[in-house]
Length: 169
Image (cartoon, rainbow, N blue to C red):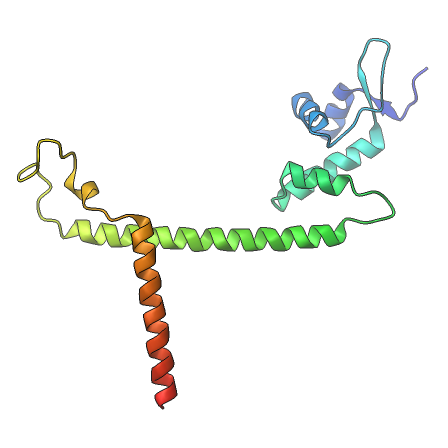
């Protein structure tokens, strides 16, 4: 006779609203665990514990935690609580996103400069181009790396000149 607390992956899918395919993936990744198998080799999960884990996984994904990070949090043994780890992970996420935003802002600035240069390019025809030239607009572009170094230099120069101007007052 089967314990009422144990459910198959199909029932777990029905109760959680998560597809069987996703639940199998979670199991493969070590996020949830079948605690036994039936004689027909069906996986059996602790209903309450597994539903709680699935709810935790979905909420952790809402704050952009990866499945690997969530797995680490789920593996923290009681009585220890993962809250300090969660706080640290969230701070790391914020720093990562901030860095990514800075990188995107740099790319945006680069593209605006390129667009401005292209807007004053009068002729886009193939006149005066070598036979191997494809598009002189693209061929005239400097690298983003060179642009970034140039922008850093300008920023440092502006910071220095505002520093000296402020200290002369």
